[in-house]
Structure formats: C-alpha cells, structure tokens
Image: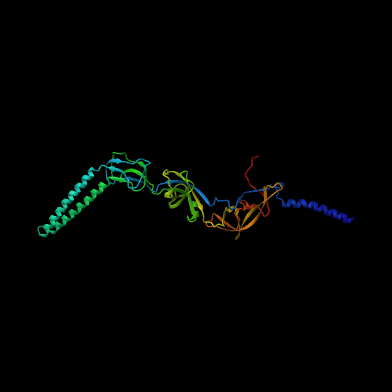
Length: 365
C-alpha cells in the first residue's frame, strides 16, 4: 500500500512538471501569453541581383557642340543650313560676298609682280655697282612682303566660305541671312554627330565604392533601339556637380547601331552590370550574414509541410559560409546553393531550430 501511494505522488508531480517545462521552452509575452510565431523576410541566395545591376537616367549628347564663325567680316549672302538638318563633313554652310576679297587678291598679285620686277632691276644694278647691296636687299625684302600679302589675301578669300568641319547636325541658326557680320561672330551652332554619346550622373558614394570600371558592362535602353545596346566608357568629369555631389560619366554608342532619328537631348536608360564575381560567388546584403570572429554564417530556412501540403511555416538553421568583400559595401558569399532560401534580416533575434513563417506583407483587418 505504501508503494501505491508513492507511485501516485510521483505521477502527480510529473503531470504538474510537464506544463511548466512546456512554458519554459515557449516564448511568452510580458503578460505571460504565448508569443505569436515570428515572421521573417526571406530571399533566394542567387535571386537578388539588385546588388549586381544599377540603372541610371541618361541623356544623349553630341561629341561636341560648337558655334561656327567667319574669320573675316562681310555681308552674308549664302546661308544654306536648316535647323535639324544633317550635314556631311566638308559641305558648305554659309558664304560672304567675295567681290572685295577677290579685288584684294588681284591687288596683292599686282604688287607682288611689281616687287619682283624691282628686285630684278636692283640685283642687276648691284652687280654693275650702280646701286649698293643694301638697296638690292631692300628690294628682296619688299618682294617677300608682297608674297606674304598675297597669301593673306588668298586666305581671306578662302575664309569667306564656311564649311562643316565634321558630320554635323544643325542645332540652330544664330545669324539671319543677308546681314553684315564681324570676324568671330557666331553664325550657326552644330552638333558633332561623328560619335553619339550618352551622359549620366553617378553619385559620389557609388562612384568611389567601385574605384574602377573593370568587370562592369554598360548597356543603353531606348525606344529607338531594339533591345539593349552596348556602351563604351569614354570619359568622366573629375569634378563633382555643384548640386548632388555627383560625377558626370560619358559613354559612346556604336556607330553601326545609331538610328537617324536619335538627336541630342533624347533620354536613354543606362544599365551597369557587374561581371567581376566568380561563378560560385553570391552577393548578399550585410544584414543576412552573421560574423563571429573569423567565421561567417547565414540562417537557412527549411519549409515544414503540414498534413494539407502547405509550406506556411519552417525552421531555421545556421550554415557556415566563406565571405569576401572587394569594396566594403558588398559581401560575396561562397559555399551556398543559389536556390537556398535564407533569412534576409533580423537574424540576431533567431536561434537554431526556431519555427518561423515567411513574411508576405502587412494585412489590414
């Protein structure tokens, strides 16, 4: 009989201890109620490409934009350049009245001929000692000056014609036809379309984080093109913009892919893709990696199927990985399958074996 009493007492103690143990292993709220199951943000290890691709707003620009002018003054009598017109290199755009410049050339030719006759006579007289050698030398100098005047007159006549120095697009006409112009006065503004370029503004933080463009490919996207067009880096402005602390970076479009409809000022999206990672490396946000001394871990999510076949909950477990970083802002991870689902944030609040549910957004009740 005493044995039966002791057995009954032991059974009662075990039954009372079981709920206490369950409560100790279950998370409780401050009021003592069971805490709701944690919701975690998940990401596929190989599916987050935002760290490897960035998009920038770009604008199409010409290689150069210049204002052409005459080196001489005169009356503008020919101006064959319509705004928006494409002009090949060497085609005449404008011209001045040439009559005065042609007379100047004739005058210089006559003066040169006269100077040559005077030089010949002075040299003949100098040989017979009729005049001094100094007079002969002065005649030679006068002949040379007349030759220089003739070259200047011919150059001035050639300067009455304004030609396109490159394959150009007429941006604007700056002077009306049949008006008198002065030397250096802007006549027409041209876009150099021998190479079409695209400019973007890169923030200072992003510009300095990369250091160089090695391993980065650039593409342009525009309704004027079919698909993506490869871009080639040309130059960047070594001074930041006054507003925004950004650097101006310039790319070139391939000449074979430039449509006739593209003009400076058109918008284009520039995509930068990094190809510097090895095939086995995966870029993860820093919030998904736990660093403990020299070791690194990620928290892997494993779904648990219920009787209905749903995967609404799962368990988490730590997985050791090897990490590296080339710029201090991106973490490249080795040793993890790209299809693995990992916890993206809040890993410091979770423990090995915790049961969690994927975060799918806020619900309004």
